Amino acid sequence: MDAVPDFVNLTLVEDDNESASFRIVDDSGTALSLTGADVFAVIKASQAVEDDASTGVFTLTEGDGVTIDDAAQGLITLTFPESVTESPGVWFYKIRVTRGSPSATKTAIEGWLSVADA
Image 1: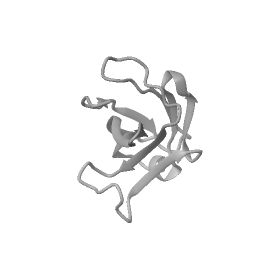
Image 2 (image 1 turned 60 degrees about the vertical axis):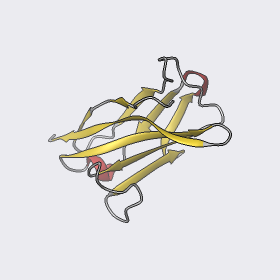
Image 3 (image 1 turned 120 degrees about the horizontal axis):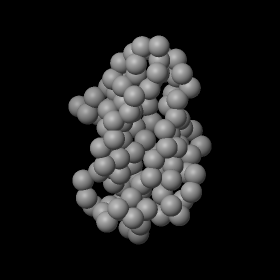
Image 4 (image 1 turned 120 degrees about the vertical axis):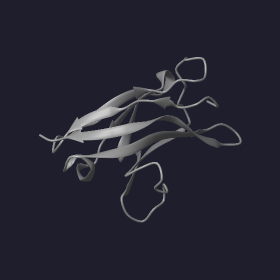
């Protein structure tokens, strides 16, 4: 997972309960096994905002916005918080995976998240 992360832009609809499914792959395009890995996502106003900023940043974790649907096939679903979809706007998001020994955290997928007016 040392390659440049996949860039995937998403469009959501204001006030909808939205989710999106992803397949996380390795450098050769093969599904990355998520068995034993930690997967989380960060949603923020722009790339310039620190991931741990005290406001305007949402962190999704397994069981709280991130669902691993099939670990062996690298399949996950993100469920976006109502705070993100409550009004039109643009957010930056990234999906990060921590795995290996010693453990390393890498960005697997990133992109812009547009919330369209309903």
